[in-house]
Length: 315
Image (cartoon, rainbow, N blue to C red):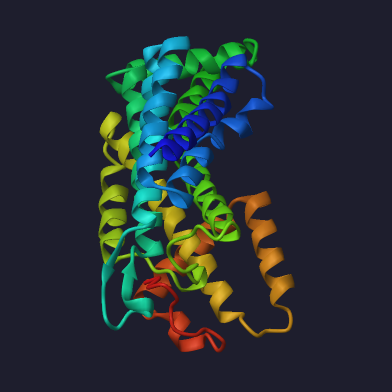
């Protein structure tokens, strides 16, 4: 118990320092801010979810004491709680005779869906902390955008207002997807660290075999429909829709990884696809369409030649 407490304290200190760096206003601190869940996840995955929970409580309390209650809330909801929940869920298993090792582990697809939900929740809390109605929120973002551009947008009259409104509309979905990516990246790095140190309790999953549960499709359709509603409700729904589309885009990448197994040009195909998607952005939409199509028609079973049975119950 004493060792777990020491690990929790160390993880809390590292996570709080990474999160607090953004308060300095330096652009170099932004990437470190999104790595703040990593120490908590390492404590949870490599040692115990209890250590992760204690680390979240300690880090939240420290940030609230040295900064403000709003910083405490932002960290706890946007980083701490997802870090604990994802590391806890990753180690969930139930006895199943047909499963590898006699245990069915929490599927990777559900971890992705969980990250989408937590990323959306974090943005929703931030939105309502900023304003309780859409017009107040839009005006605040437009004013901040005009101040950031040094009045250049404001000088353009109607165009400046339109640009500010556009930023207000796209900023929450972008924040949701960035938060989701950071959570999944930190979970992956924590898992690799636990694997290298031989402290990973579950077998390493075959990531190219992961699938999203059918619930994700219904949630995506509902979120897209509600996102057409004006006001804060539609804005919040657009955040959930963006994170779910990212989840299907990751499933689309998994399809490409699966069907190119054993292909001589696999490295070039995957490298080109990932680099193009990260640089241009729009290929992510094509990957999401591929992920949705695979959920309907199961391309991996039809075309994958080197894909064995899912490891560690990835489905």
